[in-house]
Length: 248
Image 1 (cartoon, rainbow, N blue to C red):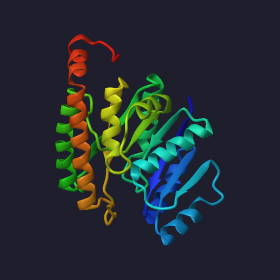
Image 2 (cartoon, helix red, strand yellow):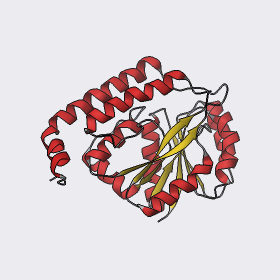
Image 3 (cartoon, rainbow, N blue to C red):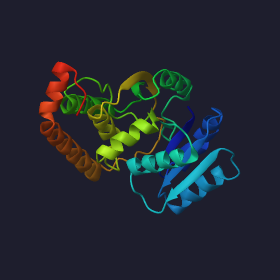
């Protein structure tokens, strides 16, 4: 078992400059994916990453979405020979002290996805906190279970073999829909999940890349196709829930 950090980045060079030394302090190889940042941010990222051992920078020529960046990083991790990728945001919101806890849990259950379940400080935007409750409702409906304790937190350990099973079977969206959709379809694929409480902070002045119109349309489309998929699989999901039989 070997681990690397998967860090999607888009126009967060200032935050990354503060966060990267802490990431380096974990002594875990880093795969950093720049998802089409503007020239100013990209040049700063390139400078930050220059002459860094065990840091692999890959650049998207244009912005393709967070999910696409994570999938690029996972593909490079596979190519480099890693068995697991630790997804973590580039803006410093996630608690690095918990990385060791996530890895420890992953080593006990190598084929499980280890997921962060956020505990928020008072600086958390209320829209984010309440928005999670809405997502929790939909993911419970879409999986007919309470297996997904949080579908939005981007702090996870992915076993690459198990994730390949999900990607081989299902479409997973490339933008803000990725984090939620990959977990729902992992449940559909009989990939187990474990959730670990982790502190999430919102640094003052941190920029959000949530595009209100575009990304809300993406999320509406996401839950429309997930509910449709759930209805198509309803007989199997109900049978599995009642009898505990594996998917044929």
